[in-house]
Image 1: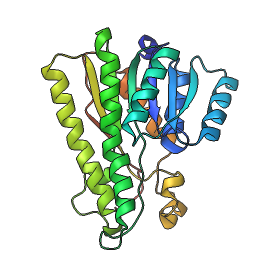
Image 2: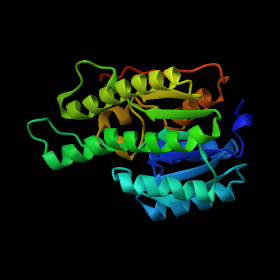
Image 3: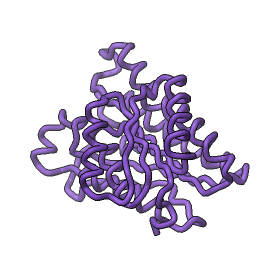
Length: 248
């Protein structure tokens, strides 16, 4: 069912590592032209090269971008349209999760988290919809949330992170409703991972040792599943958690 997306353009934010890297590779394997956004140019160059060497049907082209900067986002989407064509898929994956109690957290770090986990999603979503709408073609937005966006009593050290993911879930619902009300053929799916083995989860040492995690590739598979679903179906939310007993 991914054949209808072959040669279409997918933008993936936070693509230089972890979940974003895995999603970019998976979509390129399925034949899409992937615009991979991140700050680390060396990682993006390596991703481009490795996907090309893998013989994937599609491609990855890296773009250095600070997604917390609206001007950066607007400029990079214009460049993507010029280089690859109009956007059909957006994966809002970029996110940060510094761990600290709210009373101990530096406000500068808190602002970075809010800007990355929420404001950047708004900027990228606006830019993507602006690229999709003139074509009146099918589009899909994937927001990578977290299981912590569904919990009412998360650990205190990730309280603000959890709050940003709760906010993202509400934004996803309201954006989906707006698209439906305006008869815009863009679907929106929220994917909520549990603990994923990645650079971001390095602090969960005990859980990682016990194998209480899922892989970035599992999340990429879930993204592909949502995108590949029939055009008359909107998969609203997918939660991906380890089978083993994990205490959130």
